[in-house]
Length: 145
Image 1 (cartoon, one colour):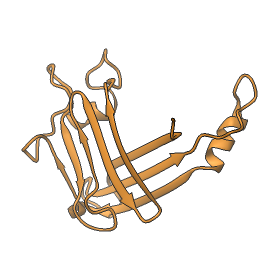
Image 2 (image 1 turned 90 degrees about the horizontal axis):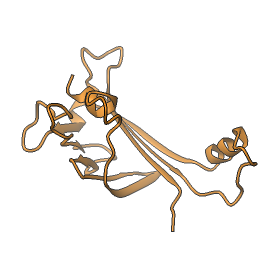
Image 3 (image 1 turned 90 degrees about the vertical axis):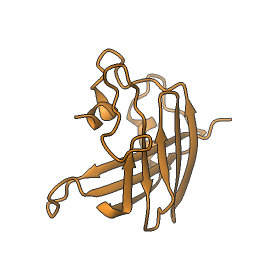
Image 4 (image 1 turned 180 degrees about the vertical axis):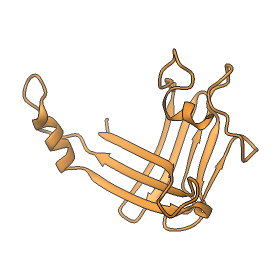
């Protein structure tokens, strides 16, 4: 049975008050399957229905609340380059999402995050690169820049 659409968005961001990318954002979203389908041909009606029923939780954290690591080392992160697949962990150390993590390696993605409004636990296998023709494309490729 399908659970709908689940999205986990993480990011390190630079706020105007930051000297570097010292703040972190966690966004969890769940869009349940709707019993009403969009009219033939798609269009905005289906998207509107998807957004109306969405559950969204987000949390902005200071730099010390998150640990980003590659394998056993903190840096440099292993981005997909020179034939190496992505291999990193993004862990929340403090605050309401403490204990949450995203683990990525060449074959699996594990995510386990909980905020007061929404919890997400997932495991994905058979990862597909953002763009297999360009190893530095997409979010994983950006990590190695």
